Image (cartoon, rainbow, N blue to C red; front, side, top):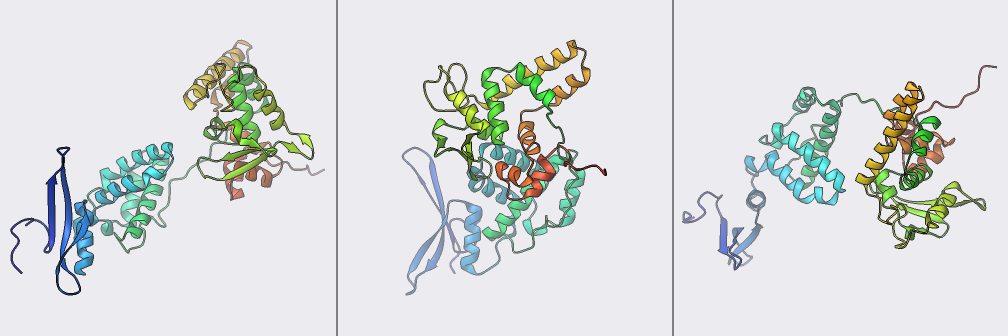
Length: 352
């Protein structure tokens, strides 16, 4: 074969094409210098990404892909480009933070060179133990996706590697804590607390609830995290439920004009997560201060531990049936409901 006069740094039969666009940007793409069925020269597009182009070239040449194309930096790049955008915004940010940590150790490593021992060493070195668990879970998913993309045929090295021990949050918002904060809450915070407790949904799902979600005798919920659909009934055996009564009261308020979001401010604006946080922290701080002035330091300490997310656990804990609690929270596995969300002891009978 005649030696290349251009693209000499590329593998044999791989070509680079560039041209200047009207916008002034330089367009670059790669091609395979092949032949069709009758032997006529044919340029097969390999794409604009050099790393992926080399992998496609290797497939056409029936040879192993160059080692440098299997570096984790390329896999991280592709994962961030194609997988992260399909996740929820909060998950995207969380995953991006985790990938930044993972890159510090694995960016320059070939995927086939990573072993379970290296994964375990990463786990042990990380000082943020719970955070390390999230990073290893993400790394495991990245390996699985990389296998689908053809970067490796080896077993996922994260498989079987122990995670750091985690203790589920066990705070339970008892009646005295709930009433102390609720008494000093603004009406929109009370609405949010009521909806979170009566529906058992996550804070983000509560804030996204619309008036149009109420139809056919139910509040229809699509969970943001799991995309699961729920129909929370507003009447039980012909009797209006507490959720139904709460919604009736909320929707009857005179300031409601737009008829859009269920939880809104006095100006009929939807309550966002930042406003919710400020409202809740203000009510909690005031409630703790009041408890201290009343000489109840123990209650003040409990109030200060109360977080809005604990309302979902309070709902799960106060439903007698584990089956019903799991259904309301949208869990397919009752063990998750029991282990993570039910925070009061099981009701049992005494010996006598």
